[in-house]
Image (tube, rainbow, N blue to C red; front, side, top):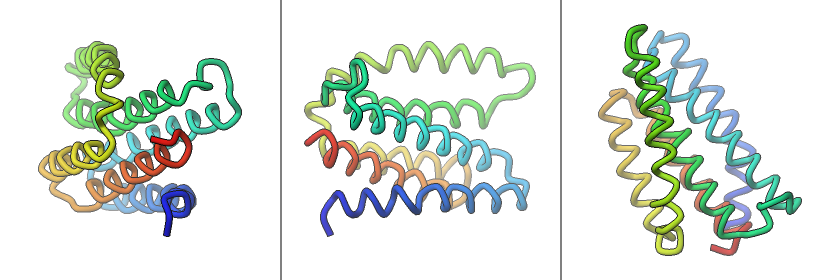
Length: 164
């Protein structure tokens, strides 16, 4: 199977897996894992939107390098950083954590744009490490597996659509 077919399979099945994970964690009342699942849904929709803009060549999305930066940026800011900060938020710390997220997300763009040319398979290694961190936080195997599939989908998306 080539990258495009795997990407298309994951494009179809990933939303159902995220929905199944959402229902499972909702029924088990695991709030931290539920926050991660919602973050994955946000990351999935953001990445789909970037790919849609790239295929239709809208505005700055004509540049494949810019789209690669946005895909990786969306994966790690919306799929990893945001749920990690919100999973440990309380009523007293939610505003502080959102401000931390905005500052760190703003500062992450420059390093990602510098490293995007060198990242090819390093993206998968970085997502394995992030999945391990998610496993340590949630003590559940479902969320790291969904993040790995989301990372694999992003990796194949960058290879298929932007000729990584």
